[in-house]
Image (cartoon, rainbow over all chains, first blue to last red; front, side, top):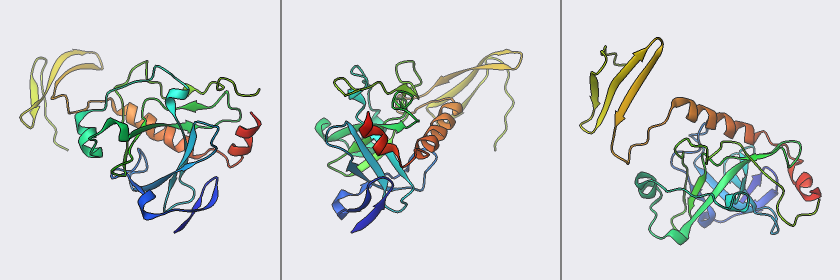
Length: 147
Length: 72
């Protein structure tokens, strides 16, 4: 089926690409079905796009590209919710808040999006409020990127 | 909403595993002690509100985003 996306025009997706967020995202509790679409092979970014609503599309970043020591435990409750069995099926993304410039843009390390790619389930989890997990972490230019 | 009055050092139980105790009352600040199983997450409500607001702000990213990014 074809869906309209916020930044990438119309994209062909299959049923198997749909990730179910049983609880939606925080503030968007009714938005349950998303797909993860690549933006650019050279960038650690993707588009988390709602299947139903074109305007609901989040640019998400691979957080470890921006903060190498980012690490946290996924609670037992969230593991069960996401039906996590094998660690290698878990992907972590951080939602990007894009500003006028890349330098002013931030990523949300406090509430990462966790995906179980095997079970096609996702959840935005909330980490214990802590200085190590800022809500607005500056998105420094990537190493090696052209200025 | 259930409303209960408690004094300092008194507590309430939520279910049989979660205890919330009033540790101190200082002016308009109340210090709570929370005993709960590890699987129960306890957050200040403001944290959730801030994340909701951040999600909305992230959605407001303009569609010029990609061109923007490629120029960098």
